[in-house]
Image 1 (cartoon, rainbow, N blue to C red):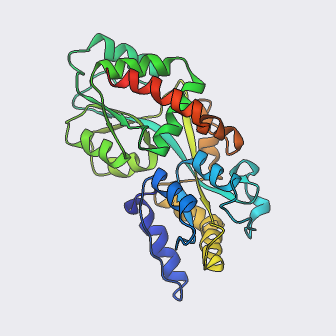
Image 2: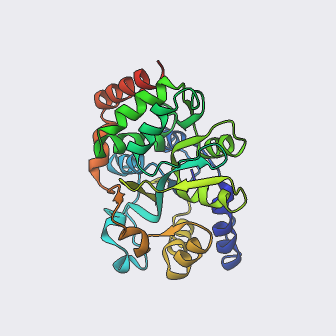
Length: 298
């Protein structure tokens, strides 16, 4: 699910080091990835990389992932592994992105965002954008974790709904909307994508909310029906090696060893464990989506 613009340097570096292994990299939504691995017994894929930690855990918990051994497993943080089946390889802060030219007082917390939107409701009508959590697995994860962290999530959702917020599938669409100035604020967006675009697009202001910033673990697993497990393991070992993690940092992603991120007081890591399955319960998920849709689509 990682955009090719972000991940291609890592793929190219691996190819340079492993001339005998060709890579076919297909980008899909996290929900599409989950459905492919669960429903297609003859799937041709050997490595699954996704930002939807909950769906990755569910695949592994339901028997769709191989148990594997990583060469430097002993040095990895224990919170970045789940039963040797789901492997976290990079940290992703979940941020807000604001158009500097269109928002004078940049909100730094959700309370400030709520106040800004309420006090300027006419100005921000049709100018907010966020994930469509009906379609985006990652978007659903961020929203459900938001709801666990703070009661302000529902107030914010209702407010965004009253302002006719646009909902989309992907971070790319959100960033494009802010860059074109069609929208002024994007809520809950993957930090590395925003940072990469902000290097070129100087109008982008990236906000790491000071009340709390969710941290996603981008993770990988090897499907049980893989045909080339050794190749997939070679790539994972490269990705998790000291050199691979340094290369990730160099290319704008955060290493699982990045203490600067982990030790910030406002950081709220999303735990890689079966607690993520709570909101995937059909009834709980249906109820959560119903409440969110009623708040957003007024």
